Length: 99
Image (cartoon, rainbow, N blue to C red; front, side, top):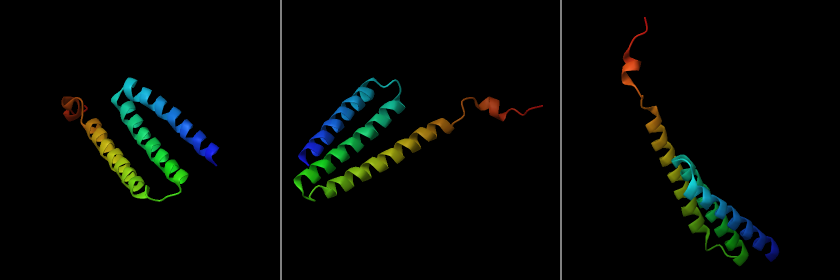
């Protein structure tokens, strides 16, 4: 069982390293936001694996809070990004009537 847990933590560490590269060198802000969300999911998975390794449930409130923060943060960023994309780029073009 400890080999599986150690392998899982190693794979999560590799995934976190790849996500950190995308977080720092992302070509756009949307890539960086998605990388931050994925990094938070990796942290939640790591805490869950550590809780399973120790055989205790003391980390469950932390997992609930991290999941809630991840969800609320994702919704807030999505609303912010969609509000910016809904505004017209050229108001004159939309108000002009077609002949």
